[in-house]
Image (cartoon, rainbow, N blue to C red):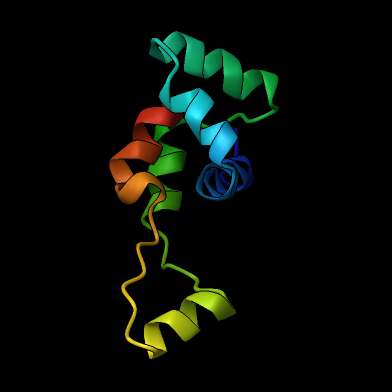
Amino acid sequence: MCLRSARLFFKRFKEDDAFRSILENAPDDSTRQEIRNREGYDFTREEIQLVMNEPLELDFEDLEAVAGGQDVDPSPSGTPEGVAAAAV
């Protein structure tokens, strides 16, 4: 188990709508764990929490949006809880 795996999971969860949807629609924690394992992710609840609390890195498009006054929501599905729930 490692932070690298948690970071990769977090990045994919934020960017891959289909992957996020599969996890969010899984019926229970056990099924979400099976999906994560099948996809090669191996991390603890503590590790994903550490990753979620790391400073946010904005890409060029996000920086332009912020500079232009647009509201940028860095969390998938609008809430960090969505990541935590999918990671359990």
